Image (cartoon, rainbow, N blue to C red; front, side, top):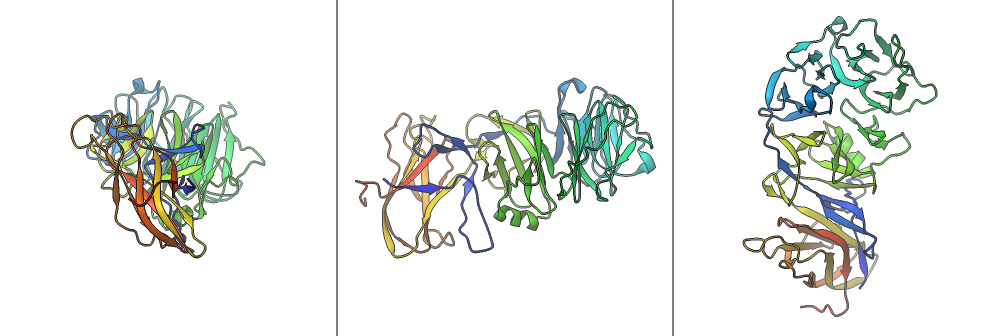
Length: 451
């Protein structure tokens, strides 16, 4: 029963004519009970919370304990919402950022900075009426990046006013600031060519000072391309790489970097699912999700859409990038009322000659359907094969995943045929709303036969 490798990370590379490897709506886990020591698991479904923010899309959301009774705030279709109530317009067409502390909530979208004190939403008197590209909170203050400069401004502790003299300039390089994060009492400033840490000094006049000798010599692609995750951060660099913690820890592969470069829009945010943190990279026509615990990428999709329908996350809530819904993870495998396609691939290179593939066996969980009646009482898994490196594929062939309790159901395709250079690839998918786990793919299992 020879095992063939199944993909644990999605891969697609235009250059070099390399075969693509699909991993869609699945995540990798360590599985010590399995021979391979690993398993792919279905991602959790996304469900509607029933609290819409207008017509959408939801560009940003914010919720934090201790800020305005822990209520959810969001910017949808250019308006700031508190739960489902519109508070007023947020000017600008850039990436949206929302920050809050005990005093209130600030929001910016590349234009005028606005502040909500719990009663009214009003403009902040920002120096020279300059536009603000990012607002965040740290050390009890609001911090704002002035557009097209290397300057950042701060407010007094628990206040919303900005004095024209309360600013500093990221001085290691004369590059403009595009983004910022506040992590473990350190303000991280992301410029077009460098990243600088500015620790909190607790000085009333100069609350942040640069940390000498700690400049990262790679900048950021654009505003919205940095995300805090755990006690560190990730960002999309000005060289279209995704880095974690420092410039030497590049977590993106060449194929992904190729597609980042070709995408007009790029954004990055972190979210939590099942107690694990993930990074979500949104491009024009795809969503790639990275799990730091395993170091693997997976493409996530919402059925009928090119991308995953989630565009932002805060406090266990997600915002829809197709309408005004707020979302969360839920039980089952019906995704926003639609089917969820779980797809993965396996294969092996063929250096020469030909080999007969008598059968293919998928090691998956069987007999797990929760349905006792209806369409999904006997759910199915499908497989198709390619013999030309994924350029063309055969028809999908269906096999049963077993009725409830049918734990000895065999998932085997017979009579596959000959395979030769350059490779043998098999692709599998499950669209029925049942749990699916993959821990192995085998070929030419003894006793398999043709039919």
